[in-house]
Amino acid sequence: GCYQDIFDGVYLDSPLAFTFGPQMVKAICKSCCDLATDDNSTRPFIDLHMCVDRPERFVKPMADAGADRFIFQWEAMGDDEGSGRLDPAIKLAAEVASKGMRCGVSINPSTDVEEIYALLKTGLIDLVDILAVEPGFGGQ
Image 1: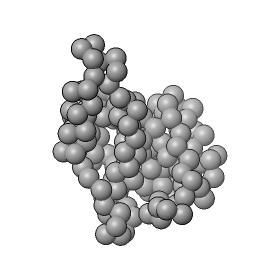
Image 2: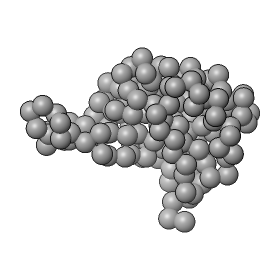
Image 3: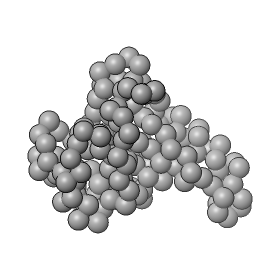
């Protein structure tokens, strides 16, 4: 598969935390499709870790670009810990599914994993990504 970190420079307020958007994802997906067999069985699965502010803005563009899984950052779902993030996260995961993508959730190493239990119980999430380092501090 192909795992891509997408940073918008807003969620992580740093000019170094800016990567690329739907146009580059589309180009990557096209390149992967060009390498695939006729039945697409060898096409790499495209995972996107969306470490962005208001990730719902990117669901349709990334689905249209060809992404297979949209992994959103739990902490980007609001300032409140735990239950304050749950309703927006469920709404986002349902939107991701409605666009034909699978959905994952990513949490920071400092976040208590119990915060996402209720989200996981919805059945909308098929992957949990527990980061090894706090976002924005690559190379630790």
